[in-house]
Image (tube, rainbow, N blue to C red; front, top):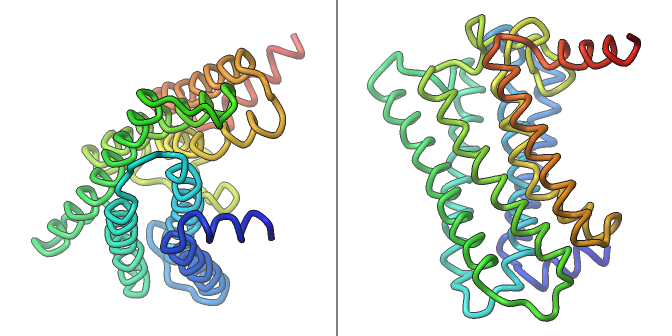
Length: 263
């Protein structure tokens, strides 16, 4: 409750936007459990659920971090996040309700334009986030502990890199390597159990934005440890990307690790 109260104080627009996305994610999850509309072999409502849930974590994390920036035009940043990411969620949900693809859909000129607009929206938010990262690298923040500051910096850096990794999927019109948009329904994430899945690295890398600062602030509490864990986290995301491009699922990586340990 203290976190939510502080979050509302720091950035009320993104606080409420996050709640809207959270409620939407819950509705989408209920629809995924109660309807039978499918796209590429999985319930169509899982995609808007995942995007809405991910947007909550992004909006609230950036609301928290941007509060530290002096003389930052937070109103413009808020408007960009709400309009651009809100547009993505609405369109993805609309397509799910119709049993149609939102991503990789080039079947009509209209769908092609909408897909391009989604890519543009995501790119603009990522570029704006990269600008925030530059401000954290350039600025001095005497009120922040050094380890926490570096966690924010590196969390944003890894987020930006693996957010743009999405173009590796968009340019192929396929998130799978070795199949066509395979969704083996690995838990709720839908990652492939049989072929390479570029979404794994995308997910891990983008959530460095939340994971690294939380780890540094509550667990590591040390600059060198924060730098080391951030490096290992980035390597993990990179290895899952290499694994995917080889056409191998994440499951095979864990199996290989278990085999080596046994040997």
